[in-house]
Image (tube, rainbow, N blue to C red; front, side, top):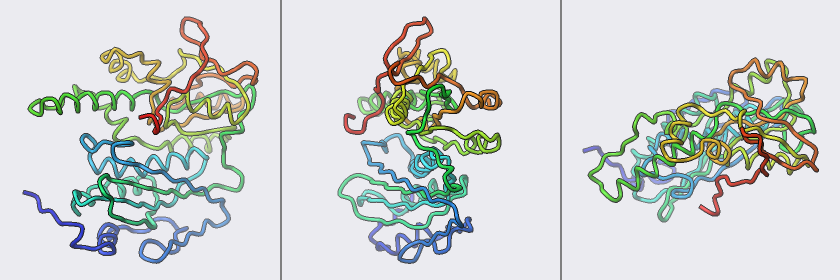
Length: 343
């Protein structure tokens, strides 16, 4: 029997001290870290980028199949992904949690193990946060702070007619991971004797439970002197994200089905569930890849990366936002991605 330490035995400040006891500063820009009234950061002439995310139990994650360590890791990574989507480098996070008494100190340690693993991997300092009681669910609020050389940040609203549309990695895997885990949960609830069968689906499960932020892509772009004209990360599904870029940039687009990067494991899983891999790639959320537009003259540089696919181009506004299937049929792009308010 594992020991269980009640949170109340430590008190709020004791809990924060306990959870942050092993954290060491890694960035020169961190002047004052955890343990004072506020953190002090000096970005030495760089511009500061800030983003925040709220993750709520049973809306954004299900603890029935999400290990707490993975949840801690993911709650950091999804925020860092937004910093990279601005063409910036993340340097700091704050992490605030609301917890009910069903969580022990040990379970929070597990969550923070994941937080620290992500901070270490991406060289980010945890510089603050808060803990509070929550009446039933687990609530996570993470804020990420990053830096970027003056005016090198990239917005969503600056794509131009003729730009190429690129995406990193592959698409649809996380959605299929969620589909699989939801199926297994349903079977388990109906018959708790049946053990989950993840049938060697490590890839799609990993895409959901342990996503990575695309630091490597931002480094590749910088090393090859490619400045994206617009960029965002793929959290709600690529069709939804390209519509954001087009709407905010006042342009249209053409996306090609045959160009969408879909991993073989994702394709096979889609067939197994009777789903169309293309639909999963277009509308599945939580891939945390980067979608960005570049000038046509950067085409020869961009194809040097096996991790980047050119999937279409930006068209004039009056030509609309269209998707061209492998059979040559043209469809309007619709945002059918993940929607927190209609879940």
